Image 1 (cartoon, rainbow, N blue to C red):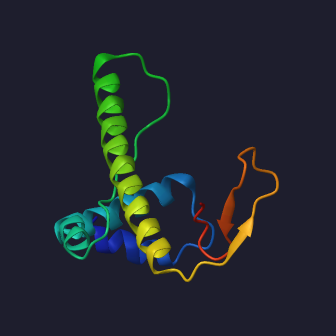
Image 2 (cartoon, helix red, strand yellow):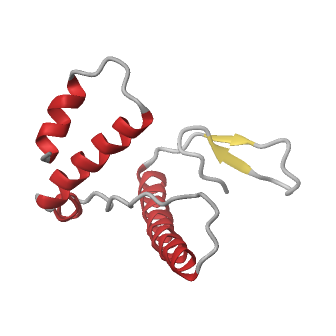
Length: 121
């Protein structure tokens, strides 16, 4: 059965089983992969889609290798996301017309936070 047939059949189900949901997702991903969805999204500035992994504890080197690959990929994406957040936060704080409010709970002598953007001085 083709991916499109699976998707069409899925639309007719009123209460799909877990297996039918997984089969549907695999069909959708097959169509997206055939059309280079990740490349399209990356070229538009979006992150790559990360594949799923099975969490059932299976003790073998192949599973361990696959899980480590998933971990490294996610760590790389997390580091990149942290860079993006810092860059955007910096841009927001630089363009903000700050409204400084004293932070009375701060242990520092005089600590002020911007009520608009969260910057501090």
